[in-house]
Length: 349
Image (cartoon, rainbow, N blue to C red):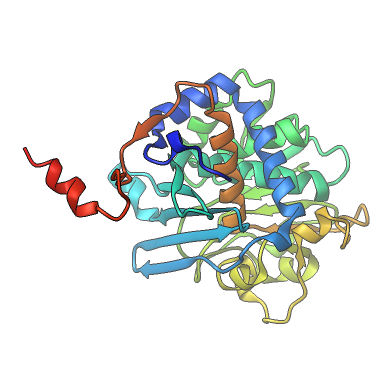
């Protein structure tokens, strides 16, 4: 990633407003599909990346995390929080921003909002994995947890997997009503449900995405039969789970980065040596995904920095030649790089 002289002083910034305009400019289904392609491409070169569990600062009410990685040419990180109590105060549970930098110079080349972008990359990752692991011709998904992620998850599954119906459940009926309204005119059959048991009836893909920071059992053992794919994306920190342990023991479990997932995912309930398969190995053909019609596959997704890196790469490519960014003067650029003080002195009013 070689910087041009004109790129060294000003850094493109993608605001929330610009991100929304960019999404509408590209089209949400196209953006989800293309972002999944970027994530897939980066997973195929998994060994090229620095990998470390995210750096987390926990409090009684939530978590603040940094998620860094580099492929040796570019460096990216995301700042993200998770505060389930925020919605009661009229605030987002998750907010985020991210940065992409040139390894050769250390100069940032992109600063962007990542609240919307995280929803997009999470949905794109879920659907990319479901395309590998879900039963053939899966047409129905249960969406348990109808908060901020639910519409993105549903539309990604429609675009990449081909679902035709989504069955919705949330403990808050207003969340279900919101999701159902937002998914009108998508071509999907929308079925609001009163219980999680009702929601999973006839579904081949079960997506769980709840916000409460607690050990919950959104899916209990007697609810899940053979032949389904579970997309568990809500468990993402210590002490927060969604899937009953007996389901985990009956499932073939797929993860992003085991050292992180064993701390934060649903598999924190299992022994440290419980077998899991890294999803990148399935994508490269090194390990098997779904091998039988009766198999229960479970993607224990907590989100990983490489997915954010892919999303940052995608946004940097897509804003070229568009008005959907603002150049920020955030880097000192003295005429003589050794004379930072002189630059300051000459700027005196």
